[in-house]
Length: 333
Image 1 (cartoon, rainbow, N blue to C red):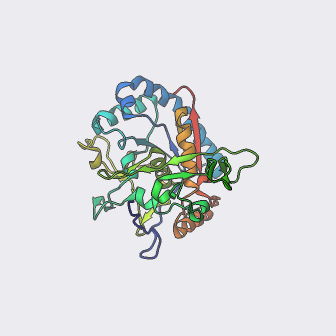
Image 2 (cartoon, rainbow, N blue to C red; image 1 turned 180 degrees about the horizontal axis):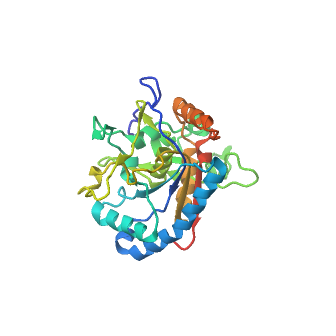
Image 3 (tube, rainbow, N blue to C red; image 1 turned 90 degrees about the vertical axis):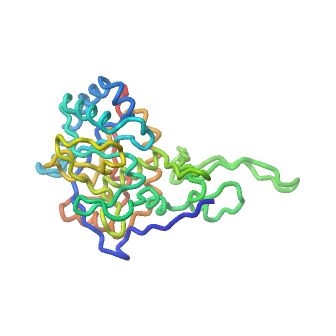
């Protein structure tokens, strides 16, 4: 069994940094690196379709928050599960087709930055990388059933790497002639009449390899970053770094900051709400993301600061993080 380290995000050791907040962060799509490199026309068509949708969400934000509503756009490159393409090969194509389609991408992020992110001070890397995914995993809330059940059938989430949104199935079995356990079907916590039960794999551990985080878990971290809910020893995590137009991309993904700001005048990366426009094939992953977000104990000081910050701008920020997250799943992709 791999031991679980403890990470602190609160103000116990240092003051919690205040982050600038947009009203809305719009994720403008998500495609594999292979799709970007080999199916450029497909990506161009999807970005063209995204342009009026971005306009519509922006206008909706202005109706709700006023004509000065702050809206930013972002894109997350999948360099965690795919590493066989160089940044320049992918990003020049991605941003080129976005420009052709008339789509502005304010912030570009890499998915491996949701696993581990360099710490920056004044634009310079300082100290050890921030273990972002492990920090979030340390804040997972165990199910009451997992805490109280000691029948040995299944280890708790912190050991198994599996998280569900309810009570798991129990297969009927006979322990003795006088003691038979009946079959028990899975049950979603809080279900109204019928359950939609989901069991999510968060990571895989192996003896000779580092922990491998799952796509839903990294996507949940991505949402927390966009919502400005993560701090490490009080400091921002994956704070956007400027990337001037025309600057060459680095040779490796790890040499690229976790989040880069492409547009100098863009609204903030972090926002009170997020909207992710994604291909419909990501529906199971995004369902899993919402389950994960429901099981993470956000640092109280960070949560209170963001809610108060919104209140000062007459923005009602829901207490539950998952209620700040929106999705638009697009047909045909």
